[in-house]
Amino acid sequence: MYCTNNQNANRHEAVVAKGRTVPTDSLPWNPHPKFAGVSLKHLVTGKDTRGRLSLHHVRIDPGCAIGDHAHAGMVETHDVIAGSGTCTLEGSVIPYAPGIVGVMPANQVHRVEAGDNGMLLLATFSPPLV
Image (cartoon, rainbow, N blue to C red; front, side, top):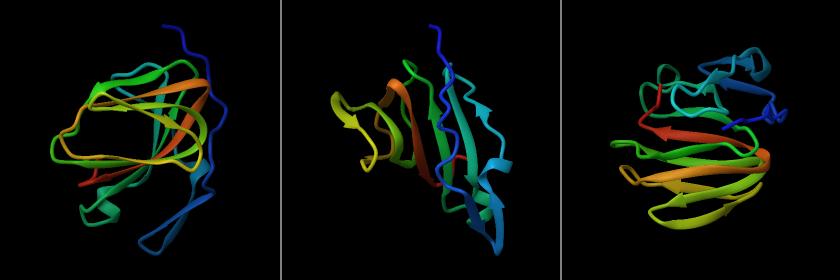
């Protein structure tokens, strides 16, 4: 699959954690290790929250997807910031657009597919992803 670059880079200007402010544009985008056209920006990690949760921008390029997967023992939420697409959770398709928040219970298979303009999510994991 060929995926084009989504330019919706940042919707949160800074992260304040453990008494310090970090501009989000100073944090690197990390290519997803498994899914093409998907990048993550680690805003808050488990080190910042004493192992309780992590926050990440997730950028999905137009026409790309985070395929079927589950997180063992982790609850994941998606706050749709920009773009649109769908989330399929245990067979139900949920339209994703700005203002929608999706909750993925631990151990449940889900997938997220970006529409024609890509999608930017704020994903929260508890316990933390990293």
